[in-house]
Image 1 (cartoon, helix red, strand yellow):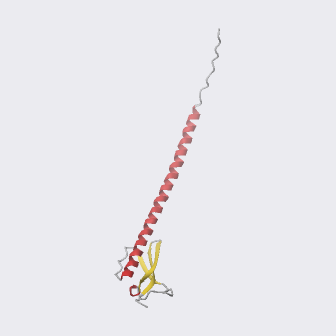
Image 2 (image 1 turned 60 degrees about the horizontal axis):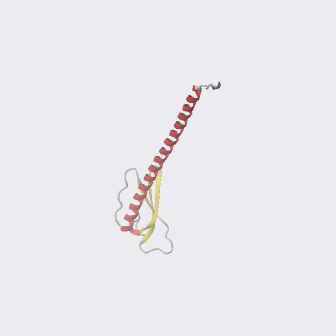
Image 3 (image 1 turned 90 degrees about the vertical axis):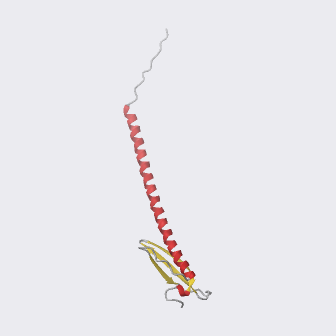
Amino acid sequence: MHQTSRRRRRPRPAGYLIGDMIVALIVVAVLTVALTVAVTRQQRTAQRLAETRELARIAEAAMTAMQTGAAPAPPPGGTSVTVRREPAPAADVPGTAWATVIVTRGQGATELTGLVRADALPGGAP
């Protein structure tokens, strides 16, 4: 006669499964928070970049108007455009002057420096 030995299987404790589930939920929660923070930062950065680009477009439009002699377009509400005459280098083109256009809105500001017609600057030609 063969004797077969039966091994007793110990039941797996139920607490082990619940512990795994809790750890998995914590990991999912941490990843969700990290993803939310990353997306929020990305959206803020995209908004700042868009605002900076808009200010640069306004500065470019003002600079182009001064270079062509056209009247500059009025800035949108809440935006200020300032034009500052810059010192001229030794080799300057007659009838032109260096100018810096400064566009500000709220906390953002953009500067653009270029050569423009001297009569387009505030105060006219020197």
